[in-house]
Image (tube, rainbow, N blue to C red):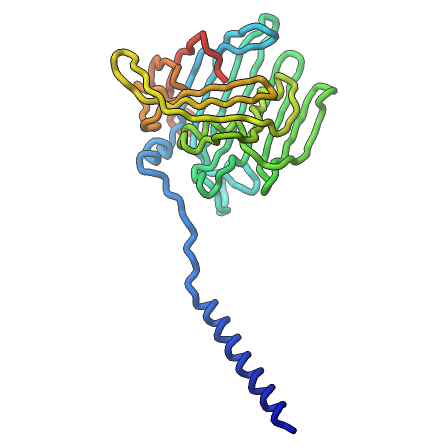
Length: 305
């Protein structure tokens, strides 16, 4: 009558030993090494040289139904960025990400008063591990008042903040599902044009466009394409990419042309859009950095997107 108990105790002991062995095997199993992204040497030599790159353009901006002339400046620089707080790392031992930062400034006059617009986009250099930009900020100042808008990546959502002088807009903070951002296209081009979103996609237009055209903050259906083309200017063939983005609902099309070869050459090259003409190159002190300056003249028949 006792045999069943002996059998049960023996079975329990076997299961315990097997379970312990299984736990030991899991603990002794070597852990997978985390992937560490190391940018190409050419990229590091250019972007990690304690310098910022400036691109200056003549601007033709449509406002109140007429083209307005002004200037646009794109400032690209790499920085250490705290992903949780989403601010530049200035001190401390908390882990940070290397990001490509764009400060995009526009200044133009409508004939009555001045406009000053600025967009900042913060995109991780390691876009394989962190494919989404962490933050986009926009501000607009004119004689009527000022508006500030911001998008922050929060997991699978985007947190949208708006602070406006105007009653119809006011102050708002809410979340929407994450998707592609038009404002980070410039950083993606500087990192690698092959990372640009393609096909039928959902995208949030630039904060500047939404603000100036009083459009709702939401996803818009878009069609994006990237083509490799060849120009024969001056008898010398050069390859370049053409990126085209169309929003059917907004009846808006944006076209960007950029180089297909090395994105890190400085002097004598057009590091912004293909249809800009380089005028001069120089270096200037910029706080505790050196600044590479690329002055470019805008083709007046085109509008900087």
